[in-house]
Structure formats: structure tokens, C-alpha cells
Amino acid sequence: MTDLHDPRFATTLARGLSVLRAFRVGDDGLSNAEIAQRTGLPKSTVSRLTFTLGHLGYLVQSPRDDRFRPGPTLVAVGHVAATSLSFLIPAHDLMQRLAEETGTLVVLAVRDADKLVLIRTWRPRYIASIWLEVGQRISLQPFSSARAFIAAATTEEIGRIAAEQVADRQVLDDLLATRSQSCAEMARNGFVFTPAGSGIPAAYNAVSVPFRTSNLAEPVVFTCGALPPEATAERMQSEVGPRLAEAVRSLERLTGQAPHLTRTET
Image 1 (cartoon, rainbow, N blue to C red):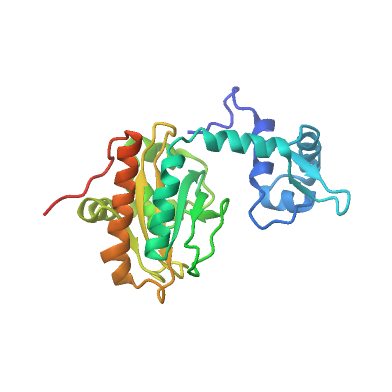
Image 2 (cartoon, rainbow, N blue to C red; image 1 turned 120 degrees about the horizontal axis):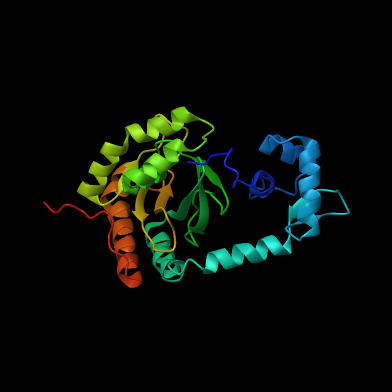
């Protein structure tokens, strides 16, 4: 649990990091006012933080429009973080091949507070696919990515997540309510599936499989998604889901990771 009153908790650092997390893919820079709106911090506090982050190279301010953008220091830190995830190297060829052969978008998501954030995408080169980008944040609604994550999470991890300050507690409660069903799907099929429009604002069919790595404290999730005309619900379950499960099992073998959830043979 994050105790904001713990004397070890550096509030100023937390606020500075919230400024960096305010940036999203597709932003053409952000003003102090826009950062304040996204973070909930006072504009005067944001001004001090962006000045400091700019001085340190984490942000750059354009003389053309005075808007802030990620700076070279932040890019370098992100590169170091990405290269520390050694499983991404063997995952690249596996997931790109999966995207090409199934005609679906493949994404890798990790949890970031009460969201899942995409850290990699693989799209088929010659087929139109749904458009999700690295850095995009997805709510922990009971859709396939979040359901796969919660199925793989341990009791201790779930307790830690539940104890955190989350913006929408009902979303987390709804996700936890699906855990037993998600675990059963994983045991039976090796993946979880959520169809388009299944009570949540998602326009695409998706299948997801969790993956555990010693580099991270929590499971990550690989997902294949496609619009219904491109991949029907039946094909996602009969073809794409098993292909994704096999790709993740191959990744586990290549990286020496023990399978966290295995398929129940009938």
C-alpha cells in the first residue's frame, strides 16, 4: 500500500513523475495548464516542476509555442528501461510473425497504477488493423487484457493493487469479480477472450495471455485484437487464441520462465 504520510515518501518526486506520466502518444506538446488539468496539480506547482524537469533534460520547451515535450534525458531513461526487459528480444520475432499470420494487432501491456499501458505493438504489414500505439493507457475494465492480468496475479499482488489509491474503485471491483471466470478460461483454453461490445466500450474482439518474467514484479499481458469484420469471434477463439497461447509458451521456453498458468488437457 502506498502511504502518502510515510516520512520516506517523497511527495515532490511523486508530483514530478506525475507530470512525466501526463504525456500521451499523439500529444503535440503540453502547456502548463494542460499538464495541471491532467495531473490535478495546481498550475503554480506544475510551473515549478516543468522548469526543473526542463533544466534536467527530462522535458524540452519549444521556443515556437512554449509547449513542453519529452526531452533527451527521458528518452535515454526509457531506452535503458526497455533494454532491461530481455524477454522483448525473443518476443519481437514471435509476435511479429503472429501478427502477420493472423492479421491481428498484437500488443504488450503492463500495469501502471489503475491502468494498463502499452509498451510494444506489432501490426501486420499488409493488412489494416486496429490502431493502438505504444504509451496508450487502457482502463482496468474487465476486457481481455485486464482479465488476463488479474487471472495471473497472485493473492498478494491483488491485495497490493486493491490497497492502492485508484481513481475509479468500481472498475477494479468489477474486474476482481471476473477473476474466477478468467482463471477458468485460462485453465481450459490457455487464453481469455472478450468479444466486441460485450458491455464495455470496445469495438474489437480480443484474446489475451499473461506472461511472467523475472525482470518485473507483476505479470505482463500479450493481446491480439481485431475488428469483427477482420476476425470473427469464432476465429479469435478457435485460431488466434490458441496461436497466441502457443507463442507465449514458446517465449517461456526461450527465456527459461516457468509457465504461470497452463492449459488443462481434456
